[in-house]
Image (cartoon, rainbow, N blue to C red; front, side):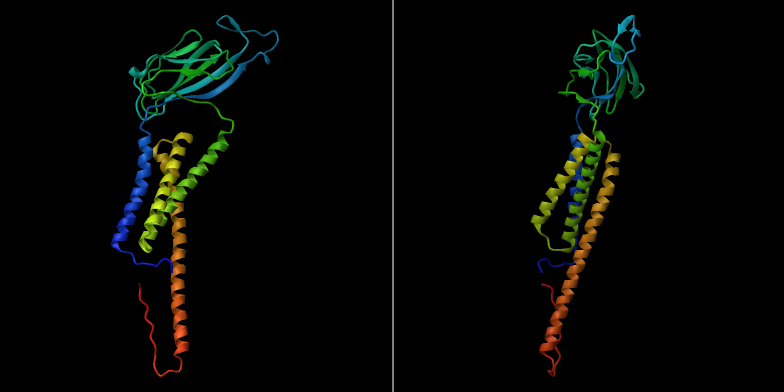
Length: 304
């Protein structure tokens, strides 16, 4: 047989346990260390036209501040500290500027929601743009601003913040649901494969001969799988809380471990059956050879 079953011993159990712990801690350690950054998001959550030149009723005139308008668009956006480090008011070189590239007029704006509620957001309209004064934003602090303008384009943002080379701008996606579903399936499969590889490596060390090359290969592939899953959760699904990660990872890990354990159990059983069958065949051959002789032959098997 290519692989010989071995009885478990303390040394192999310690090695398999250490490898399992390292294989779990190292990827998640790398993932959470990568979260230690400073970042700001600018996300458009609503964009809808209220008045347009094509659908306006003839003879109807709409005015804002005694000024007749031909187009009116509603915009709603979030500004959020999506990094793990706080953004201090002194980190801003100048106020945050919200504007339209076509230099459209901003009619009004209002801060609608703040998280936390005592977040101090001071904004003012100036020369077809909205200025937001520097403020303290801790991790996951955010605020929502509703804005009405004559532009049909998405608003843009301009800011200079220490430690943030560029602000992440997010716009609505038409195929967002299908893309997110595909990403969820990919993450689940990667975690499932990672758990399967770790379980296989531990069981192989415990019950079979140690093959360093196979162990290293599975360990590297497992690290690649869990690291890829972590990057998808961070940058695509934008999951950053530990509880949410556990909810996603736990079912995939359990299924991967159970599947590998089931396959390994069948493999061990088939190996034992093959060994028993070989011994029975040997006994039958010896009995036939020495049949009729006035002595008995006893077969002893030894582990080598």
